[in-house]
Image (cartoon, rainbow, N blue to C red; front, side, top):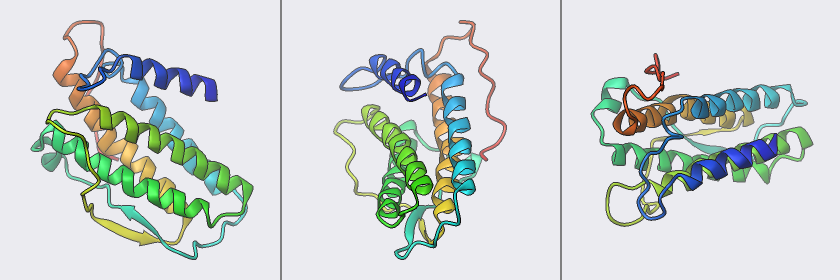
Length: 191
């Protein structure tokens, strides 16, 4: 399983130009984001099956990742990318902070997996850029504090299922050739 994930990420990164990434064949394949959605759901389910996890002593600060489709459509890809990066940065901080507070092996393992997945998206999205310069963490996304570990997983799943899925869809729509055997259907809903 870990090897498959590594091969998938390596394959994706090999299709990305170093300085300015252009969406590639892999972005055009809807199966990639669907795989990450399924994995996010699985992580959320597995953490729910862990022994009773205690509330976090220090609340996790999580991004509010909901959005309206009309708002999303009106933004540039660069604005969307920066917004997702801000959300991921906050989510990574929450997962790292929670890892230091969880002694349960099951919960710690799931948090570690979530951190790795979110960090992979974070690193990947930093390679995409439509504007000069690199992304700098100077954003302040809307956030909320939560003491339940399951909230971190819910937020991650909603981010992957919502903003990330629509972002990849928008990239594919902008860069994938019509009639190239791609049967990408537009996502039906954000969550």
